[in-house]
Length: 150
Image (cartoon, rainbow, N blue to C red; front, side, top):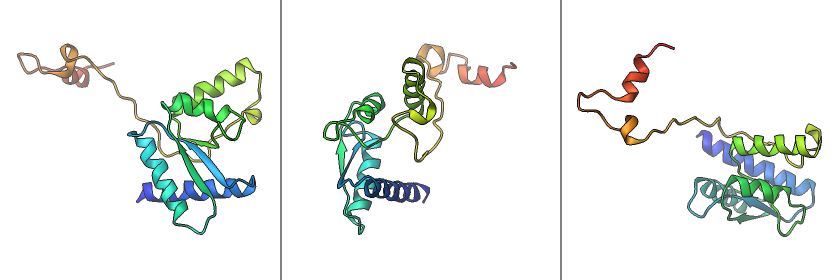
């Protein structure tokens, strides 16, 4: 239910933004053809298509969040993107870089967040010999970590 609400909210934000700026088509940078962000962009497209909005949504296939941010920075309306689905660390890195190298203020950044879907979990990934499989005595790295005191 929360995802459906998020998709509807983002579709409404997209439509409102397009109306404010007089755009007939919004370009959304959405990652690879088989990625999760592409599925989300397709759902937003379907909501807009089924609504009374006269805004078209063009989904731009990219190599991921870094390219999505680059397209948001591109000021040419036919090659850039108006919206992008971006991982939080990529957003913060691009923002920090723009603030430091171009001496921009927060208000002068060429992008801002309109909706936050969720905080991204941190995954700790290990090689099989480190903890992905049980050792001969059934002891795993995961169990060792749980029993450790820091």
